[in-house]
Image (tube, rainbow, N blue to C red; front, side):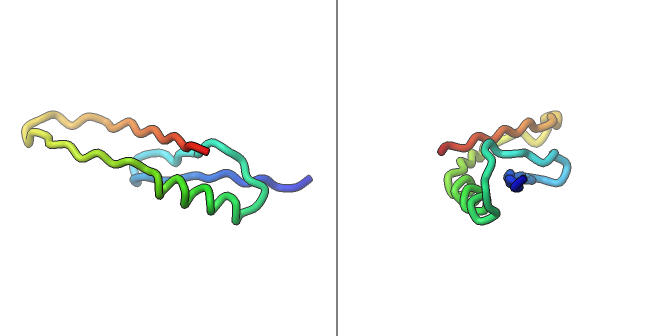
Length: 65
């Protein structure tokens, strides 16, 4: 039985590892998929009040093939 590879990413230490969709036959294919995901990631920076209560962040990631 051959092994399949999955891609897991860690965004920040307190957040859990996230498994991206997809299974890959080789490490090279998995690495290429991870690089494509990172190149297509969107980042949004927002202004927040200094006196606001801290909320737990919820992170979601979606890949497009």
